[in-house]
Image 1: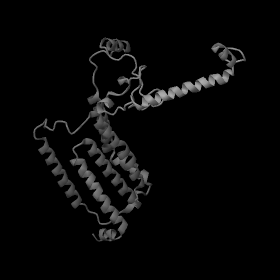
Image 2: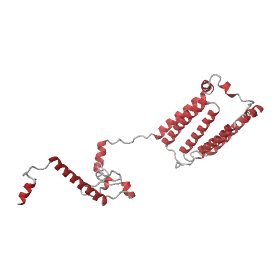
Image 3: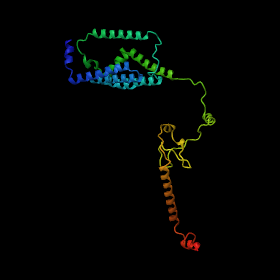
Image 4: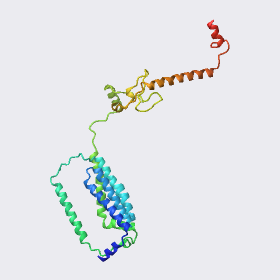
Length: 290
């Protein structure tokens, strides 16, 4: 125990502060994983706990393990969990009735037994001094981890991979639905739309000619009245359609008048003054008056 006390006394203040702050965050994320009602929120809480564990690995010199914790577990496996949850569609509205009676008590008993075994194992651990990373990383950090994973813990590694594959396959099976009827072709859909009397051609676009193209401004029909079909029904229900019957129409008429005047002057400028005595000249107009 003297070796453990001596090693603990070497811990810096910054490392101790980091441990206590991140430890609280990790425990909070673990509790959120269990207590959250929504499965997606639980998965995100577990992802936060995994990120904190990666920081602990990096702080203790296990750089490769910390990077793997973020890239593989948080970035790949947790995203796979979220992918499976969203495919299956687990929500808080799902039935909470037990399909097997007594499964909650069984789960509580198994959890209690696992906790007792964990505490007993830690209490009986005979650790007199810290070995450090020198012996574990004698042949290299990556090489040491590879030797442990593919020799001593190869069975657990393969079981974990099988569980992940099973989750993905289960999500596809649960979300797959067999089509009970033949899909209609585009021609059949068009014929059904005509028989039902629905809008067959495209709807008119919103906007008042080329002056406004906002979606809440209805387009104008040839007689100057606004077209209701040019505005979304949602905007009409909300009363968010802007009125274009008053000032906008007056401005539009003034703009058309200015355009006609400008086009008329441009045509006169391009054609030039009429020849003397010809139609349209001053002499011709005076003779016509006489």
